[in-house]
Image (cartoon, rainbow, N blue to C red; front, side, top):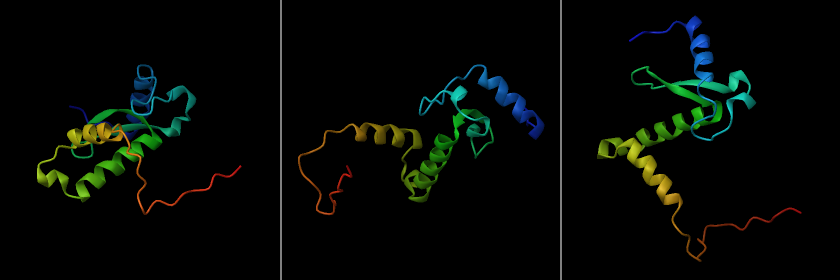
Length: 110
């Protein structure tokens, strides 16, 4: 295993851009983004590089992971990847024809 230098990061990122053409999360094409908006994502526990992400997806992935840790789910035997799959599945549940009492109707501007 090799620890990269900061000088090598740009070279590695450019090599990866020849193979990876889109953000694996949001599917936006890297060629349509500014270079500074393409991140070389890595695992913060072991430092290993995972791949390229666009800046918003890289930021959101970190925020979701930190929230998962903060609420203590990993200490209750929940695996992060299974949590994410469950979250995705839940967003596909059919909605009921009932409105929550705290919901405020938002007026649409014309």
